[in-house]
Length: 109
Length: 298
Image 1 (cartoon, rainbow over the protein chains, first blue to last red):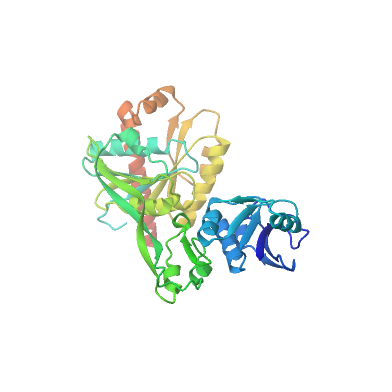
Image 2 (cartoon, chains in turn yellow, purple; image 1 turned 60 degrees about the vertical axis):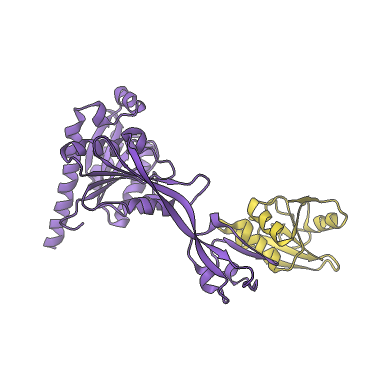
């Protein structure tokens, strides 16, 4: 499964960003191998529609779930409509993915 | 401005609460006395329209203001994602099998429908505000735009309101505060912009922004100093330095504030202000005709 994590950095040891829409990068982790890709978030500096832009990056990367410190109303609407699960996570990207796999993260709708 | 049409004067201010609406409505009332049936007041401050509180018009008609937003036919759509890729406002997203539109974010540019390779997107109307039409007991033609609650795109409503400008009448446009798009959209309809300010450092800073906006747009401007007090020469000095006409001083005065709080214009509450207000308008006309003459001589 591919999981997209909002982050201010570029790897598994980078912190989870508090906000999906304004995160610098969306890090897409393959949970089978823990390999990852870094996608820059065009929403980071957008005037409006940041959450939608970030959600589009998550979807285009083929992720089935997204993790961030928080989600805005527009990104949640996009994820809910498209069937991508949104989870609140913290710590590093790696820790957040492990927590998701352990069933410890809260699902937001 | 053609020779036959009457000039349109906008009233703007760099910040809210400087007395812009008080001055605009007072000017309209004073002019309606000497030009009965020929004055139009248009309230373009669609995010917080309030000229009605001072003019007490009877509204006879409301016209909707619509913008275009995309509507996607999911049976035709192939989920290719080109619309989302090209939208500069992230107002449409293709998330797996779902196509989601965000009308609040849409700027109505139509690029989504343009790039759609299968013609799945049509643009449909969405109401974002309305324009009220009516008149006052003094025969002032009254127009007022209002942005719908919860909507954030003021500019299309401002444009629709300002375009009710009737060339055959003396039109006063009450502009939104600030110098952003809705203000520019409003003053673009005018031949001359009257900038209302206060004699404070804050008032001066905002006035400088307003003057720069008018100059860049090529709209001549003059200044009304409201709540004027002795010993505060900053705005006056600035206008002298920049060669900007100071058209009127309205003093800091409790009686004016009280009349305003009762919903009365300067012209309603204080007949002695009539001549001064009419004189301001005549100064504006003179300034415009001098500019026109200078242009011909060039």
